[in-house]
Image 1 (cartoon, helix red, strand yellow):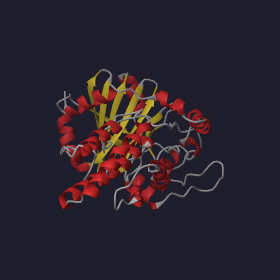
Image 2 (tube, helix red, strand yellow):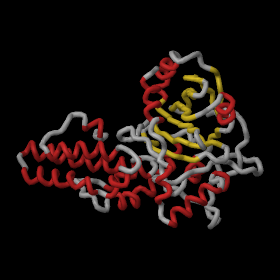
Image 3 (cartoon, one colour):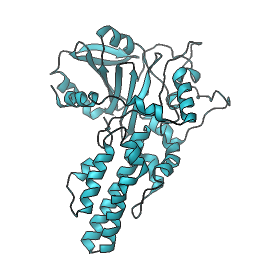
Length: 353
């Protein structure tokens, strides 16, 4: 068993917290119902012609959680046409305009969606520096798409050869290799293209027949279509500052903290966005604590201790604590600061550069 396969088993042992969806307020619950009841992608784009294409940033603490919103990505029947048209808002009829930052983030990723009804996005994070993850769930099955820089493909492929002999497959014309961990546990490595490769991993109860059927319905779409298919709960760059204002409402900021820089954290579900933001806050306060201790600034040390001690009451962390382990990780290091000690592992644990 490889280390990555072990990691997958650990992730699958923590089931998605679908019960949290019921905690949404009335307006969000209504919106959620609308998203679940219809095809999102089908409203924006005509189905692509089937033709060959030329063509795990893990969360800050590798925390995998379910987002409050869901995404159904079935393409509705329609006239044949090329993917690549501007996504149109159904209510207004005007083209949706995305910021250059959002377009760059979308264009850098493979933009693969499942063209079948009922699949819902449960996790979205990363989409920066040629890495990202999006996981879809339907019933008791999950299919996770992880993409990485192409320079890591050779090692990943060599490692998978220890699993079994691969079977050649294609995903919307993109060649790859399928590996089997068991009769119900599959993985596909799509070969490098445009500087990245993609890893598709199953979770839950699958059969070979069902996996082949789903693979045949995975499609690659253009950047506008991909962005347009994301529900409003997903934090894309142009939503980052508004969402950050909510996250930071009761959070004391370290000296020199740049809120505007939060637009570069990628495309994330609410949980992962909260983790990314509080990571930067925590790292900023730790840097201030280290500076204050080194310079004998006792007032600065006290400010840092008080700020991080208050994190036990930050609304964002208290809400996130219902769905994952990131707050517990954060609080462990915050409490160490209060005692005047800090493990060297904080840099990796909190994602401090």
